[in-house]
Image (tube, rainbow, N blue to C red; front, side, top):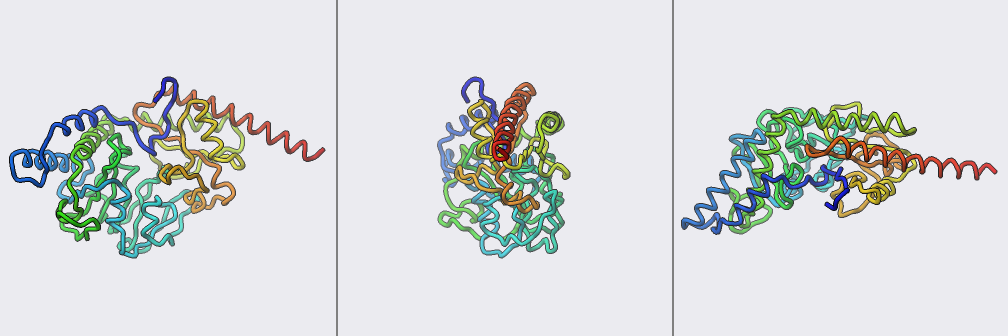
Length: 357
């Protein structure tokens, strides 16, 4: 990140934690393949299993099966493909690809579930931060955005399977996991050598896995130290500043319980991609909706599911902060956004006046 820029897109990917970097460097010195039976292989296998246990403990999933994958997208496919589950349009595209989006959401973004055993429901939304109340017996939950941001325990959620990713909590990109109750049958989609208890073939990415484990432990330590309250106060201060300084701005999901770091900002008529570009030029990295669609910007299915008109569903941006975000940087963003908002209003007012002449 160049000097002077401010990163406010932690839900897209969080900066790599120093603990993760250190663990990855240590992993690079481990020579063996975890499937090999010689001393070097056994050392690699031991490091792999320690990391698996660390991820399980951080997730409150002691005793569950942690199946490492290339990320949350692969974990979603592993958990959902061919099962015919239902979900809501508020889900991430990686989940929507495998389920029928027939469940409605209310204006706060909350989803009512009729049949948990046939349903996939996220714990927290990446765009609005809205946190769902998961019903007992839920088939699959996308825990990706919640893991490391709020206290949670897989073993207490009462779900069959959970999806997580390393880079959302300060680990490396390209590594995630599917977590399932011990003994749950999971059909391998990638077949070959029988790694990951026969559920996901391919030599394990030990460098990524050890980085994931270190980041998960560090994120859990942050939560234990009360970092969530600090982040939430910063988010709320930003919301209050924007609300007091701008007309026509709303914050989708504010009625619900939300992730402490996430703020969706909707200004009807001011395109989200325009705001993102203006803020980028001003030195701030934010996003328009989810950033997981290869750079594509389109009206948000999350916002339309919440009852926001389709013509306005592309007019939101997301600000997502993290433990290292400084209050002065958030206030700098607020000043820059309010200035851009004022210029936008002036242009709109001029056009409206010109149209009446």
